[in-house]
Image (cartoon, rainbow, N blue to C red; front, side, top):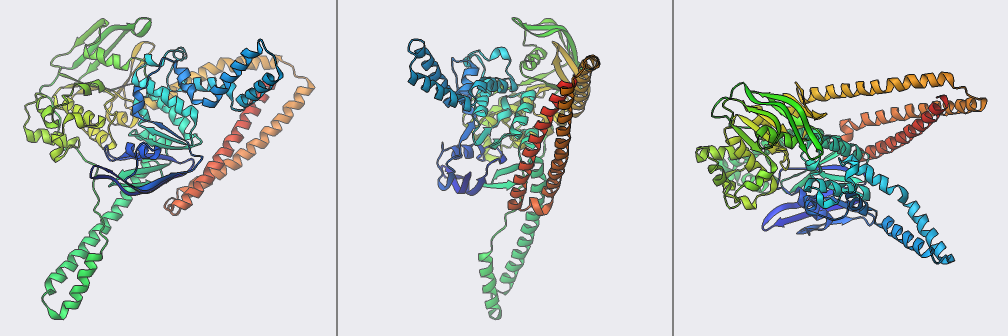
Length: 637
């Protein structure tokens, strides 16, 4: 579908890519990963044609259509409703709808045969495009990614940048391009929306390239990982967790090969140095010198898994209670966020505040910080020193300052060496500390702001989506910093892996109350799943009892009995076919896990295609089973 061959791209005299190659095939689900600034977003712009390669080529098949979600779309505004904007995806259907409306208006006063013919053709094509169900499809996707039904007719311009980005994502999904390119799609989504998108993308019929630093999201969506590093593109035939294991194995092999080669080079150099002046060894010396010149050098492995070498402390220890909230209420007009709810934060609490957007998580953080007007009582404990990190604080960085200068003005009285150590933890090395804030990327500014927050020596931290715009390495550094932090914190985050690593309590807002789960995120997920099962069971039980009574009192005639018998026979046949198909799927999945398969891209691609076809067939059989089961249920009840 798309072939990238020997791609080179320079920014000034700095090569971002050098002879890089990658082939994108139909139905590929690719995760594009790498450190910030290495060229992930640039590659997407090169593929779509916004940038031109310095050398090499990018070729696309004629039928290839591309949809690109990028951060530039945050600025898009419109007076039209979000439903109308999303439905712009159906350009041909919209044209036909206008044509149909125009013809119908003419036919009110002029009922000529050529108009009837024109209307019939337009309606046939409109129906073939699924025109009568397009609005419901658009509504389903918009509501799936977090919009309420009442929001669909509101103008796009009324929404914040993050919500506008969701509308543009919905529009792309409705267009169904053969290649969908998503640059950090989860940055502006809450957990329920992320899970909805994961389910959608897993079954998406086209190819996907996604840039993301959400580990769980990548594991749940992609089937192939492409690493951007050392001006090249390296492909791994598995999701992010597979990539981590495979990369470790490859680096171990490369490290051994490098060390063996270095040992060989040193032995050869010693031989040359020892016998250089001896005429009897001249030919051998010359031969080995030439061999050294021709040797294809193996690169050493660069360890990108930095660990913290600095401990973030605080000036003074707080009292037992950090914040007490008593009978708190908060509303925005008719929108009730909290009502007569209470909560307490104690010293040592590591709280993750989670839930859907619009439930009041950011408002809750401001209430805890004391910057949001409320009804009720907020009490701050003894010796509490607070630091607050949020995305809008990036705007408070002095753009004219150098990075080191920005930290020096934070008032921590640390030496330049100590500040350099902190910046080193957040990947600002050597002369990079003298970069001006104004030239930094969004991710780099986030790292500076995080450095300032952790430098504050506060014993109570509040953070709103701190992992947004950070790469995997930076998230790892922040995770380590918070794991060894001895103070208290409350963090809002949709990054499930991050939350699972740092939280010992989970807060969520439900029924206008602050609810607490006293355990880790993984324990909370298990508890929540059990809770939902119980709720479903309690809802279904009265219905089942009612249906049972109706079934006992409802006689069936002979024709219904015959139809029921026929349907059950068909259902039994389908069940046997499903069992056979599931067995085939299991067999091929086992084969795909074997080293002799996943280590050979061509064989793996063949198996993967067969696997996709089997899954598609299985899905069709399951759909048939459900339809038959519904018909049987209707006849029996």
